[in-house]
Each structure stands twice: as C-alpha cells, then as structure tokens.
Image (cartoon, rainbow, N blue to C red; front, side):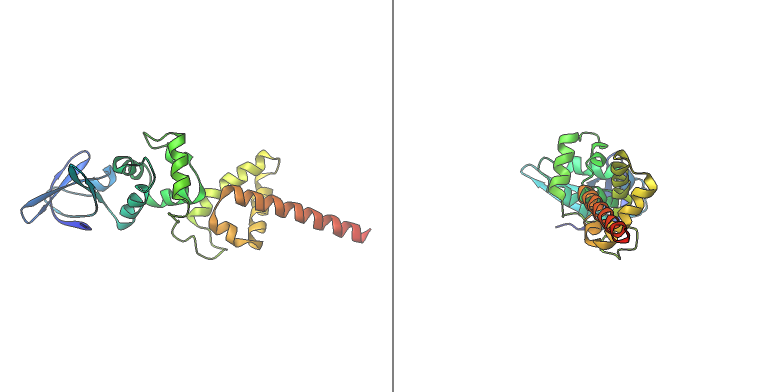
Length: 214
C-alpha cells in the first residue's frame, strides 16, 4: 500500500502530476484543487490511494488524509468508480460530502457532472452511517456542520406547512432539546417528524392547561 508520495514535483498537468522520487517519476491522478497546490521544481506531497485493475495500477493523489478517506468510502458505493469519486471531490470539500451523506441530501451529489438523481440516491443510501461529519458527536448546544445542512431543509418543510421561519426554527430547537440524539443522526425526515410530534404534544399540554384553568 502506497500511503503518500513526497518528492520534487516534476510535472503538473490538467488532471495528473508527476512526483520525482529520487529519479523515479510517480504519476498521480488528482483534483484541480490538489494539483493547484503543487509547483514544478518544488517539494510536494500527496496522500495516495492505489487502484488495482487486471491491466493497470493507478495512483490517485489527495491534499489531505481526509480527502483520501472520503474517496475510499465513495468507492464502496456500487457503480461509483475512482474517476467518479474523484469528480465528487473536485466539486465538494470532504466535509460537505460527509454532511450530505449523513443527512441524506442527494441533491448535493447531483451537482457533480455524471451523477443523476438515481445515482445520487444510491450514494446517500449506501453511505448512510459510513461518513459522519466532524464534530457531529459534540455537545447538543453547539451548532455543527451537520445542523447547518439539515436545519434549513426542516425549516423549509415546516414553512410549507404554514409555520413562519421563526416559529419553525424555535420549535425545532425545543423539540430536539428533549431528544438530542435525533439531532446527532441528522436525518431530515426524522427531525421533521420529531418536531411535529413535539408540537402536537405541546398543543395538547397547552389545551390541558386551559382546561384546568377553566
């Protein structure tokens, strides 16, 4: 397993770079973002993933270990090969991919050329539980990247049902304060159901209080 390459950058192309390792040139495929950090004639390092085929050995290079990890997990999705996985990383940062997979946001993946709704749906289905946003396990009171992804979707769903954005946001916060584990999982449909159930219970409690006073 070749974990990384470190040496002098001998060439940088549109989709590949060559790293000179003491006279041996190693070619790696990489995203435009990773390639933009390499300068010909200067020292360079890329984390790598080796793809073995019957007729080839291909290295893919990444600017960080996190990018490589996301790439390797994307390859576990049926129908997603290394070129398509690299295309996903060319469009989205690793954390954005983690958030989209964790929250079931398939639209994020349809922004990648070559990925339609069917493939995007399969990606979020097969990646469920495999990619978790960094900081998801933090305290319930701290906003995370995951919350930034799912909360607007839940608020939008509630406003379509007649709530104002302010009331929807406040209700979500109160509902999840009673059940923070739902927030950590970040599933939009589950959070919406939890909030609506809390609103129903809160309405019932309010009705009971009115009845008692009467």
